[in-house]
Length: 448
Picture 1 (cartoon, rainbow, N blue to C red):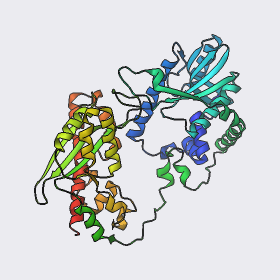
Picture 2 (picture 1 turned 45 degrees about the horizontal axis):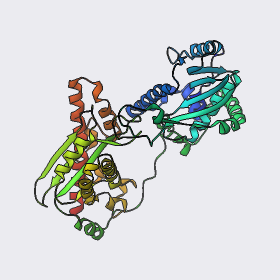
Picture 3 (picture 1 turned 30 degrees about the vertical axis):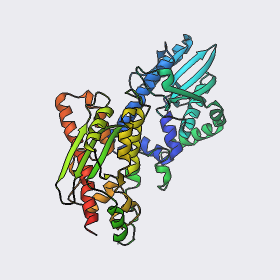
Picture 4 (picture 1 turned 180 degrees about the vertical axis):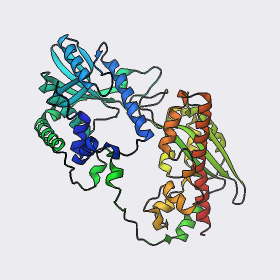
């Protein structure tokens, strides 16, 4: 068997940027460090693929014993086809040194149908190019495909009770687009094979292609010598606009923040694929201008649906009146509206909360308060270190929301001792989000 030169993933690298393919093959030690969140996304995609097999039961798997033994998968696939199996999972093919695998290959009435599973809620453009290579290789290996489809998550599916696999997934044929790409695929394969044969690093400038359709894993190397232009705008503080805005707020001030998870496959009743599920909140409250600030918090157990216990706790803390201060109110208000939709008995109380929400981000987004050090960003993590340098996420174990989501989603996998440590870190992170707002608010009011 011919050892493969290109795989589906390396073909896609080369289509995005030939230099990415070159670096992957010859300078892999220069890759960006792998991030926990990306590893989690990959694992979720693998789990979705296994779950989708239930749409095509009774199949045989051609999976290789390890990622370096795909020749075994190719041999198993050929044997399964010869034995006339009607459903093959992870069917693998090698045509002239180009390797690909397809999630599910089905024979119906003597005709072959291919299904590629994606952890998305729609068919995206890169999926079509990806499938074009699969169609090209499989067809040239003597398995003429009648059709090729993308299987994806149905974001209109609402889980009630056990998962309903037929409703969880949808599928869409992309056969017409894929067949139209045949000549492009053949030409690109020849181009990329020549690149790898020459072993000559392509000279390609950095640009948008470094991040589309996916971020390249060599950006740290290619962008190392690029100096981002720093805004030359001068410091600007519009005291009058800031004061008018803040004068509308009413004590007690409740500084509030959510953290969420987004399970691809809904884990709880009354939830959909990729729905944001709040699992934690932090709340700093100041009753009057000069009173002491109080702090309360909530964190789910990592096992059960956290939303109802969270909203009961939150509504109890937000009883009465006063402004509820958030950073980027669209996020928090959307999560609250979703809880009201999914748990309608709390809808009236939640509506009262929504009417009191104010957004501390506004003065920065509207540039009433602007410093060149913000680098034209108005995110909390851009503003805080400039205005309140004594507070730092760098001192925390968890430093951003993606890591918080990942750690919470994996709590149930750990021992009680490790769970306790992770819970402490989660609470510290969310607490800093709301404390940061308190201190930024103080900074704004000191300019009155």
